[in-house]
Amino acid sequence: MRPERLITYCGLYGGCCARYKGYRPFRQAAEIVAEICDAHGFRHWMPQVVTEFDYEEFRKGIEFFRREDTWFVCDGCCKGGGGGPPDCVRK
Image (cartoon, rainbow, N blue to C red; front, side, top):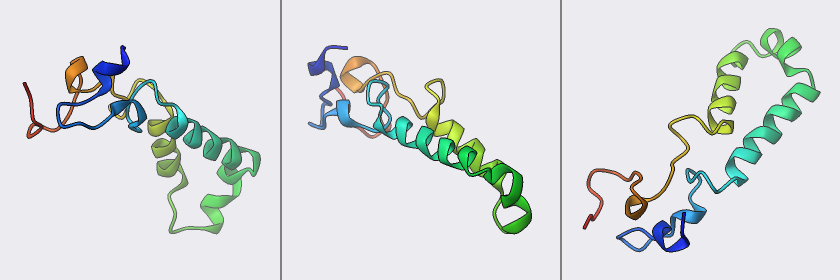
């Protein structure tokens, strides 16, 4: 997408939005958290030790933020035909 298509009608720049498909730092952070959990074997011991924490639900959340095919990842801003709340300024 051309950079100018990432500028919203209200003046924000979608290229640094955590939801923008081309902006990877947020998804990379989720990937790092998943790798750390795996490296420390959290899956094997955490459910028994920390009973008030649902590890499987936690991992579902991490996977949601990590993948590109979820609602969290947006293809572009309003000018590019993408999302935004219904009350956004639109042309």
